[in-house]
Image (cartoon, rainbow, N blue to C red; front, side, top):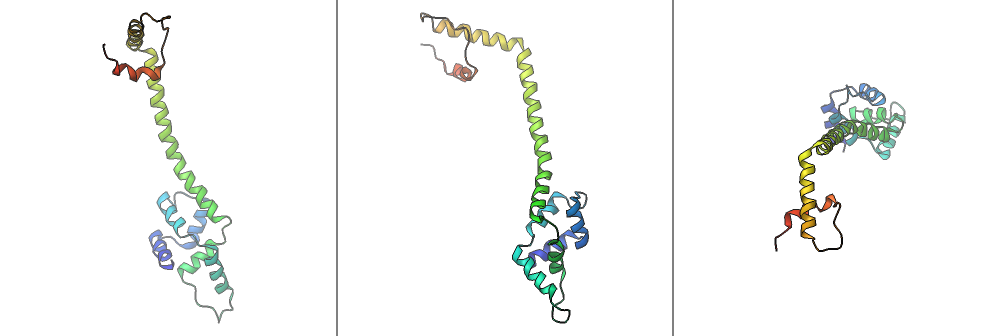
Length: 161
């Protein structure tokens, strides 16, 4: 796991303090969505933080020199609600593009609805279908005044018998 930390930190090419400030500020200019996912993948566990904090708390002569990974863990652990903050930030980065996609689909649907509402030929076709349906059902007790739109696909399967 320590090796993964090191690889991601080298990939980030950002000083640890700067990364910490970018996380605190949720600065997308410094941490793009790809980098944010990389940071999320190396967020330290509570156990890892405790081990590093114990080592850092030792007197100067007894402790080992902290490397970049351990320094990262120590620095990043001071951020309150770190995991929740990263999850929220990742949600925010995904939400905008997702909304744009849904908005485009809704706009397309609205255009389609408006086209159908104003298309005389479409209404004429529906009228013909209703009339043909009434002819096919001749002899029944009532004449249909309409039909359900969900029944339109069944029109294709009508046979002449």
